[in-house]
Amino acid sequence: MTYNFFRKKAAIAAAVVLCSTATALILPAPTADASILSAVIGSGIQYVQVSKQLNYYNGDGRDKFFEELKKKYGVNEDPLFFFFFFHY
Image 1 (tube, rainbow, N blue to C red):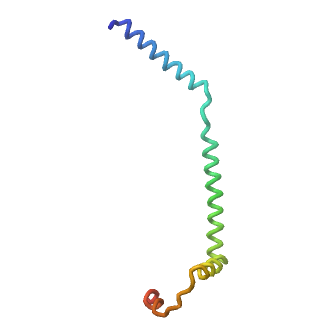
Image 2: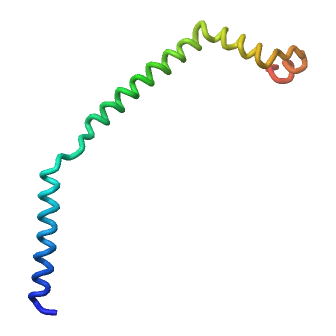
């Protein structure tokens, strides 16, 4: 292997690097600003929805939700159950 062989390989490598750099400069890069902005807007919308739902269940919705649970699962009126589990 001679000096010319390594010189040709170095020239080819330099040409590849030059072409890839030029291509990267010519082609437009994908914009990440739109995806970040949409993520921020989406997170804000989700926050508002969750906040509305939590405020509803902390207010008037609590009684309605509790009545639905009582209808679905029934009510345990055993006095010993309350004594053992809720006695302080």
